[in-house]
Length: 379
Image (cartoon, rainbow, N blue to C red; front, side, top):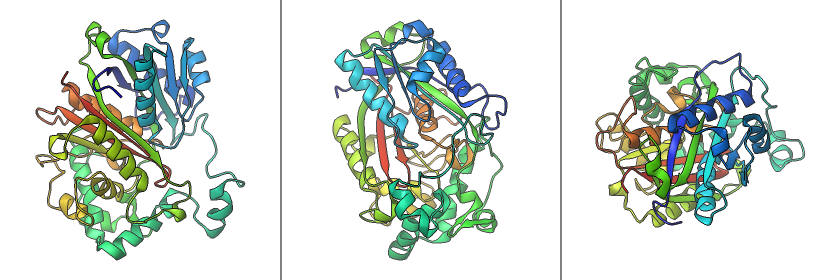
């Protein structure tokens, strides 16, 4: 992809966040979409591309009164929206659309218009994992992290510190679900969910959504918002079954997606000012810091423990509070992208001074898929 040829000009989340019992899934998509359009001064008739996951892009387009020339229903889990950004940038560069809307909406807590839980019985997971008791993310994500702890020495205290640091960021964010400070002891004393995960090491369950609007960089000056340019992108998949990962201590999809994005952006790790890593559970930032190349194998937990990712640290990480303290409606990737945009616009509640390059990295399923988006506010 051409560097900086496409820009994000619209970005917004749903009007309400957290618990929204009076809005269905499609209404959350529409609310976020209309907020993003208002953000950049557009109306539905200005949109000619629609992408979404968790809901049909056909339904979203119809609900909003959009007749698109480009449609993307890619759905690979919570990082789907990173892939949508990548695909939308390619579509705009190719002339398939001029203005692409990416939407997300989930009634993760209230379950208004939401689908069923669990894999289909005939799926690979349904046939070869579910019969052994791996019934959902808390029990399935334990499989790789326990191997990581055994081989690389990750301690319970270090795992807890991920949640502690992200709560520090959440404390500065008025929209965060949980803002009260916590300690390592608080995390370790919280209720056990599925060993080794305690309650405070597991993501929130909320309602909400978000939307992005992308267009060509040449048009960005026509909008009232500060443009955020796409610098590099990557995506990959490994396996729908966590039990079949090539290496439980590292994600192949993370490594491939991250390298592709860095190569495309032409930057070094030292150039990165801000980082968003999908954190459905506390171990994910540890894996991504290593698989993206910010830390050597087995050193990410110590990197976080030493304060490098907390407020005032050299690599601000998950500055909205993350899925552990800010929001997690089920597919968190959109919220990570929103925070990267806010940081580069200079409008984040916990603003990183002088942030010029931000990375938003997501996971789909249980290390099944990954998407990486590198953004900049410099043309």
